[in-house]
Length: 73
Image 1 (cartoon, helix red, strand yellow):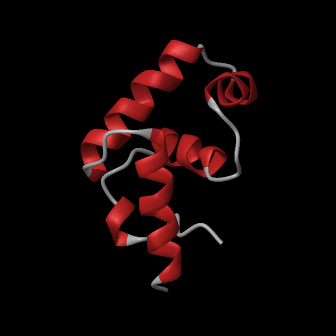
Image 2: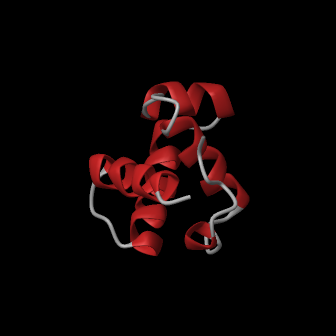
Image 3: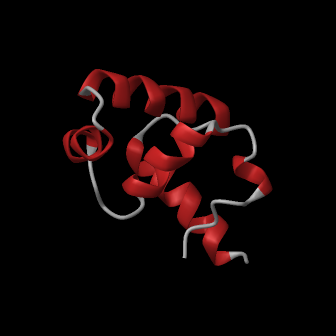
């Protein structure tokens, strides 16, 4: 499963963790926006904030990074 309680994710807000969890379930921006009743630009802003906090620069990098967290548990 997805390591939402990983210390590596401690800096993320609960909303950012929510978005990340949906991303890891293969949902993308528009679907995440719809699910959380927020705009796609808000989702993008949250994602940018997540990238900055964990030190990645794309959605793919983020997904690979989180997948590697799961693998090391």
